[in-house]
Length: 373
Image 1 (spheres, rainbow, N blue to C red):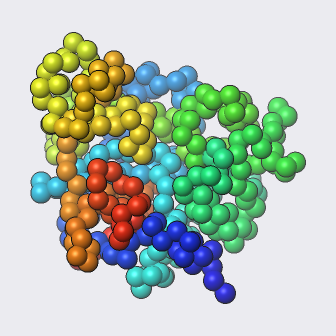
Image 2 (image 1 turned 60 degrees about the horizontal axis):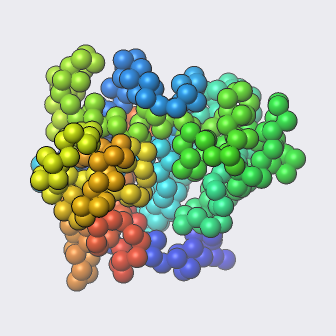
Image 3 (image 1 turned 135 degrees about the horizontal axis):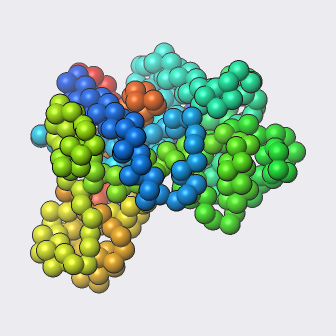
């Protein structure tokens, strides 16, 4: 009998490349060192105060959770791994855990899946102690219509296989009576948040917002995690030696960060001509964007779009080109994603593609496992 993943593999072959990426142990260690350096700075009270001051008020609510599925996205350059961005609800982690079996690593895939379940149990324990975790809601806007909708089904199956009831739902399907958040009359203990409304500002997310603000549901990842990790304005501090010195970051950690994070700066109208003349050096991104939305390579910018960028609160990140890999007779670019929890890398995977961004449409492209040479 075919598993859900087998059926997915047949229906959505563009999700997966038949290739695998082999990297030297030193490269994987360099990525782990970079993650550890970033996490050490994020733990600093002064860093948190700065990041939260520019965040929505809901992000300043205290939380003990650490944030499930932090995605550290990296390009491999000749000078070493360079961090492009951090995502708070990085997709594909479970798909890549199942994909390992197709490359002879079934036991490793099973171990990673067990680790994912343990991560959610730990998020619950941090907030609720020894109270049993009974039901998880995997929440996204119109989940059946999402590109990674099949992964939601796999998560539901995974949780249920470990004795945790689970449902995949839209926020509109949730109800809050002032004490308990419910789906179809059943209490929801924890929300695995796949929404891209990172502050729950949208009207349709008001129920989640209210329950979260009142401490009646555990949400992971949540607005605080996004503010501390994924707001791209944070990259300005993490790639600025003076800012790191002001935070009291030690010399070895500063060295790791400055080598591993491309210079990132604020885009202001006052510097418009300088940015325009040097635009080929920069990648322009909105601070709260995701998935390459409204992000532009400087050498592809028209003057009209550039004017929007100048007045849109954008950041500019020095371009760090992705590595290229032979896949059959084709040459593919690779984005490397480290799935991280509590400062530790759980899984490393690649997204192979051609063109400007990871599009899951390139024949032979898609998710690919990363192994150590």
